[in-house]
Amino acid sequence: MKLPLSRRALTAGAVAVATLVAGGSAAGAASARPASGPAVASGPAAVAAAPDIPIANVKAHLSQLQSIATANGGNRAHGRAGYQASLNYVKARLDAAGFTTRVQRFTASGRTGYNLIADWPGGDANHVVMSGSHLDSVTSGPGINDNGSGSSAVLETALAVARSGYQPAKHLRFAWWGAEELGLVGSRYYVNSLGSADRAKISGYLNFDMIGSPNPGYFVYDDDPTIERTFKTYFAGLGISTEIETEGDGRSDHAPFKNAGVPVGGLFSGADYRKTSAQAAKWGGTVGQPFDRCYHSSCDTTANINDTALDRNGDAIAYAVWELSR
Image (cartoon, rainbow, N blue to C red):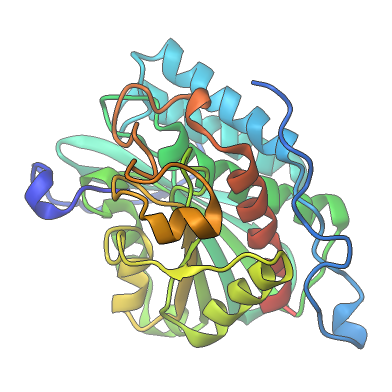
C-alpha cells in the first residue's frame, strides 16, 4: 500500500506511452473455513462451490517472493530486478495453468514498469469480475505482507480456478499491478488504457492489499454494496465481526477503478494504525500496537505474516470470486 501523499516522494516521471508485450516457512494454520461454510445460492449456478484455498500454497508463493527479494538487493520494487523476477514467477504459474496472460508496459520515475493481466477462458466477456493486487514492494524491504500477501492469495485463487475447471457465467480476470508504491501508477495506467466500453464491461473489481498483517484486523471496503455484502457474509459464517476499511481508503489500486465508475470492493488487515482495545476484544492481538509494525520496513519478511488472517482472507477471496461470477 502506498504512503499518503504527505508521507511519500512524488513520482518523478510521468507515465509514458506504452505498449502491450508478451511476458517478458512453516506449514500454515488449518483452514479457518467453517465446516458448513457461508450459505450459497442453490440451483444450476451453485454446482461449483468455492474451494478452500490451501494456506500452505499461499505461503509457498510468499517464500518464493522472499527468495526473489533476497537475491535482488532485498526488495521487489518498481524498476528493479526483484520486481521483474516476481512478475516472471507469477506469469509462469498462470501460463502453465492455462490462463491467457499479457504484460502491459509503462514508464514511471524514469524506469520501466509492468502490469500482468491474466484471463481465464470462457464466461461472458461483457460481464467481467476482476481481482487484483499490487506486486511491487517499497525499496526498503521485500514487501511480504505489503503486498506479497495479496498477490500470493490472488495467484492461488486463480490457480484454484484452473484446478477446479471452474466455468462461471461471467468472465474472470486477474491482475498484478506495478508501481503502486509510487502512487497507483500501474493500475491507473491500465484503467486509463481502457475505452469506456471496456470499462463498462467490468462488473466488479476486487482489491487485496495487505491481508496477512501480524496483529490483524478484518476490514472490508464499503464501496459497492453487493461486493461489501459478499465479504461480510463470508466472515459472518466464520463468526467474525468486520469493520469498514478507512486506513487505506483511496490509497490502493481500487481507487482508479472507483474513479472511473467501476464497482469496487476488497479486504485489508491493517497497516500502521494501532489496534484499539475494542478491536483486540473482537479479533485478539495486541492493544496499542500497529496492525503491521513492519509496514514499509526491512522486517516485512515471511516472519511478518499472521497465518490465520492470511488463511481466512484467502478463503474469502475465493468465496467472493465464485459468488460474484455466477
